[in-house]
Image (tube, rainbow, N blue to C red; front, side, top):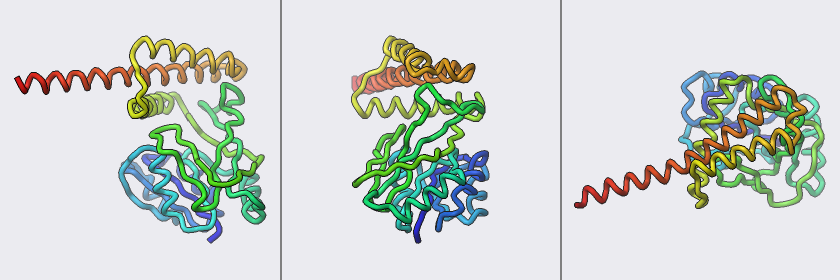
Length: 260
């Protein structure tokens, strides 16, 4: 087989059809699901995907599990809320046919926020490596904001990968909560401290950086909304990290009380 498309999922019924249709040119589609309670698994099987069920260890480890299930020469790792446009598909096919010395390819990613494609705020061109030879790429073990580490030279594709990052404000709030919790655990594992004052400071800096330094102000109302949600995510990540220390201290105190 020439190409395996691999996707990790959990409750992605609202997005997964378009994603699956966009990678229908792959020789196989592998879906690794971590406990969906909607129709995600059913939809994936209707599209002929090979679906495997597992637990949730974090984004990086989960994507590596999915890669290990692939059987083709090339692997396309794509998220359930992303899709390959026809133009990008043709560019990928040409790249795999004539890769030269490259073992992987990065591409720009065009992400939408509440219906608007964002061109500023650090969201464009947002180059990501998603197409690579099997055995030549592995994701970092981060719980969130994982990156692909490639053994070899990386080429460049010009057509963008479409990313429906946040369809509406409900998704924004949901992902702020999910990603800030995962980020707090990542901070704990990396030995980074949190707390209320750090949360306020880093949250304010996140807003200023997104809206002013990265010109999010040029994306209109959505640019302001994005800057605010970035600040919120940063704030909650540091607050949650501080609360993890408080919970650990309370648990230790209870243990000491039990011993007395």
